[in-house]
Image 1 (tube, helix red, strand yellow):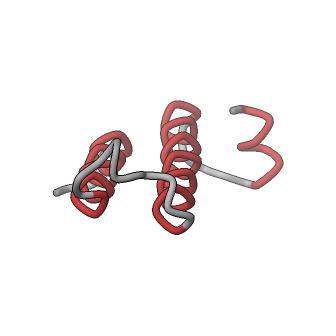
Image 2 (cartoon, one colour):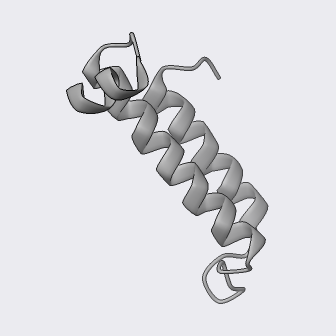
Length: 66
């Protein structure tokens, strides 16, 4: 994280940067799964609700209020 912080001029502490990068990667994956229909009917009955749950978890990870 220190290398990324220096390269991009981030002022946030390394642990916060790690949480933000993790959340961004997870959100990117969740959106990709939703857009490209990777959540099949055999795995999820309500993909929208699951996506909302994922977003709430990621918000908690980075410390955003619900």
